[in-house]
Length: 306
Image (cartoon, rainbow, N blue to C red):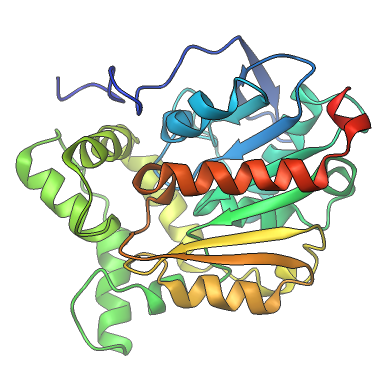
């Protein structure tokens, strides 16, 4: 049981894809892509965060696939995407562009949603011509553009150099996470979720996070520690909604507020009271509703019929 990479029953168990694709990035990295729902439905592209996988979006996929075409992919080294040599925000943007090319028709537009590192992927890709071609609107969930380690509150210390240094050491640790145990669940819940998170939500997150290979987790932690996408936020000109949890310790709500203030075309900031970092699992209805609203408002009837 400890080796399961995701839960296998309930709303957080990933549904079977209608079809699967492999997207090849510019450096040869191969990305696992899933397509759910009917081919003629309005398209949604989902980019998961650090240490997660397509399984993280299970609740959204289940709800949206009835009337949307949902495209979810595993970031390089995560889930069923093999590890790659390069780890950078440029690689994240390259990979999103590759997914667009593999799963969308030329000129076809979609709502693009990203959680945590997936949101950073959207920011990093904002200036790409392929993003302008395919992104009708964006949703940024529980993410930030910089100062991630300095702002993180996973350690109960006062802000300052000591907390930043220790937080960086914890988040960048090379030690394996090991099996999912009661202690591991409590640690993960404290660090990444709100205090009221139900056991099934904690279990779903723990299975996914603990399945991430140690080397991949560490490599991406170094990218996140040095993250600086502030200039890219200014280039994200499509209508963009922002969601953050008020009890998020990894990317505190100050990041969501900062993004909402800096985005050229912010169409809404939602602060989810009592929620932590794992908003698509902690507050699935809120995230799904936000995606639906964006597709309704920014994918016109002609695009929906493609």
